[in-house]
Image (cartoon, rainbow, N blue to C red; front, side, top):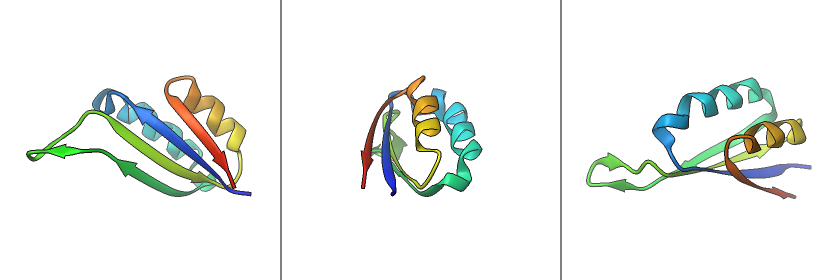
Length: 76
């Protein structure tokens, strides 16, 4: 069973390193990562939405990410 986890980052520039470290830690369990944010006049919006497709260690990833960010999980 695969799971999609959506993570809402309110401050991408501040959270990027911590977020990337967590994803790297679980890299072998993540099949797909999609980052969505709005660009305005050649500048990046500081808000972002990241979708990850997780194959295993779902609860571990969910628990660690939810300590810091608002997340939603969809199993399929």
